[in-house]
Image (cartoon, rainbow, N blue to C red; front, side, top):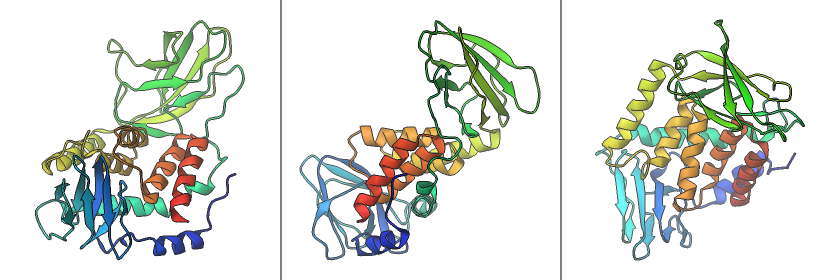
Length: 308
């Protein structure tokens, strides 16, 4: 197992870092484009990072053609395209979203996921077996027609997938062809909202893999997800573009870690800037739940490097 900084050392490093404490944060950086510098707390200017906590009086300094989108403590958005000093507005938005983001990042920072490597549920290749990649580990999916993924087996010219409700009911089987990435088709009955399922895959010339379980989002949970998206939209940002930072938080809080991971990947691939240590810790926590141990360790290493 890769060693990480002791908790005491991490806390000391965090205190020495010119970032706002949770109770002092006036804004969070949730989107970056181009080159943006930030100066706060008497520290020298440094490149802004996604998830930066900014105190009142912090200076955001975008280069020409660059911008930063902030969410303030009041839950309002700030679209910063020129040198701006952060204030602490007391109204004009949804403060619950700001508090939710701060709380989630704090929870990730205090998680023990970094020490949980090697536990059951990690994805490990097994020769001759189509190891199930997703969904697994009892995690929740946000659709009644999920996509199933598994590790291909050399020489297999087709697979059969079996899906069954854990609390009873007849299992159903489908031939998926040679693909190891398959979505429940539109001409088949959808899965039951709120139900827990087990699934397995057998290659054409081998034994089936061990079962994995997952849960389908319930109607109430889906309504909560839609309400979260509506709150982000009401701030004047699209949940799937400029509001993707908040969308990742909403997904994670609902236990939709597959979707939370996709949102974080979207942030990273959109050229929206590097993550803070807090966001790397959140990414590591999510990857750990997905069973992707090596990627989780890499995310934790990035967080540790920033906290040294």
